Amino acid sequence: MYQKVIIVGNLGGDPEMRYTPSGTPVTNFSVATNRQWTDQQGELQQQTTWFRISCWNRLAETTNQYLSKGRQVLVEGTMQPDPDSGGPRIWTRSDGSPGASYEVRAFTVKFLGGAQDRGAAPFEAEEEGEGTGADLDEEEIPF
Image (cartoon, rainbow, N blue to C red; front, side):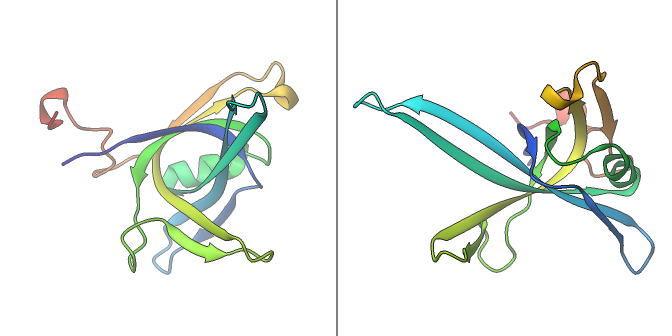
């Protein structure tokens, strides 16, 4: 089986890089996606969905070096369910409302331009190695 998600949004904060005990770099950052619509009463509605992105190896180093809060990105990867629930990670915010985080392991990150990045060229980075899904032939995808 194979799954792939594509997310386009803005970084909610600067990336954070750390190393596993074996020395493998991993970078985490959050991406917010926004949706707007007009309801039946003519009121403008907005919805923001947050995704927690993890990048490994060379992709971790590249995203940590070039990304910053507010930057627009396109992320391709796979959903990583919470090991305890099998779904998104659920928590309670400081104001008492429920929150959920959707975890994604990125295998491609495209750096897109934004209002603060006028003139910046788009840049693409991919995870190297086996198991990313990037090395599958079209015939191996089961749909």
